[in-house]
Amino acid sequence: MKNQILVTGGTGYIGSHTVVELQQAGFDVVIVDNLCNSKAEVVDNIEKITGIRPQFECFDLTERQAVRDFFGKYKQIKAIIHFAALKAVGESVSKPLEYYRNNLTALMNILEAMRDFGVPNIVFSSSCTVYGQPEHLPVTESTPRLPAESPYGNTKAISEDIIRDFCKATQGVSAIALRYFNPIGAHPSALIGEAPVGVPNNLVPYITQTAAGIRQQLSVFGNDYNTPDGTPIRDYINVVDLSKAHVVAINRLLNGSNKANYEYFNIGTGRGLSVMELVNAFIKSTGVDLNYKIVGRRAGDIEKIWADTSLANNELGWKAEKNIEETLLSAWNWEKNVRGIK
Ligand code: NAD
Ligand code: UFG
Image (cartoon, rainbow, N blue to C red; front, side, top):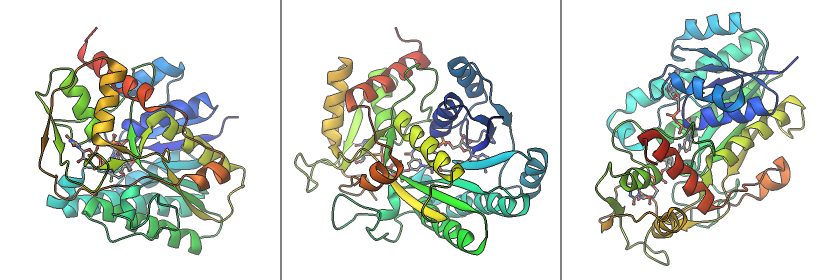
């Protein structure tokens, strides 16, 4: 019998790609999502890619009884990947309570259900945001976490701590937190990808929407940083590579090869790219010209960060494989598919 995995937030951007990778690795997947930032048709598109329809339950994970009813019904779940969260950094500054309530209450309901229903394993979506602007680069897992810049970032740091304490106190449970750097790109089928609601906050969706003519111009937020070309540096990781790291983490937990019952790993490429390098790579790989303008800095942005991925490479045996050109091309193919552009 296939091992059954619960993927919360499974109709979302990273969740949907991970469901595909899990199914292709032979897992049976159940998705829970309340569709507050995704669409039910993603389930159809997952099925088009894999030929297997994941089970889908639509409810809000902040509702404690609904979570308990779910685990009462699905008794075979061997592990959880917990993606479901609100993630807009700027919005979290103006709506802190909504962010703390959604992200922390959902997590605690799930952990409580793990304890009460005997589900032993969880993989958690964390973020490199927990490092703030680090003093030394690249960041390793021993780089100290810094106070979060936003309520969103704080929910990630607090969630990591809650999971650590829960694992310490609860026999038979194990967790892996994956600290993602900047996920970009889409599935090569162009059937699933990032579908931001309204004006995108993130760089790559803004680029692809500008290239598609939906936005007039990309604003490059600042070229006066202390970096070679003056624009900020990030570690952009292909979403399919990132999704595969979840399959590896799940296997590690299921076969008990984890070295502690709470572990955390950086998931990036190990390579930093500036905003202008990314813009130029987009133009080069797609052949589409991009209208952009250098404007002032965006409040709260950090200058530069990229990952030391040695721990994930050596301990998990996972490595990012796709290059930036094919990743940007995948993002553009997805945008074209969504917009009906030939
Ligand atoms: P997303 O918004 O596309 O997916 C999250 C999904 O969770 C959505 O489908 C949403 O409807 C669902 N959801 C939110 N609250 C819920 C609730 N209370 N009950 C049920 N469903 C709920 O986001 P994503 O980019 O796929 O991110 C997935 C995870 O990875 C999040 O935890 C996010 O914080 C984390 N992360 C994302 C990035 C990034 O840049 N995309 C970087 C680091 C970490
Ligand atoms: N940028 C622009 N123009 C835009 C959008 C972004 O120049 O229109 C620049 C930003 O200033 C930044 C870089 O592109 O220098 C990347 O910005 P993103 O918004 O794409 O990504 P961030 O690194 O700011 O934040 C992302 C996620 C957060 C997460 C963080 C760390 O959005 O949720 O990575 O994981 F916390």
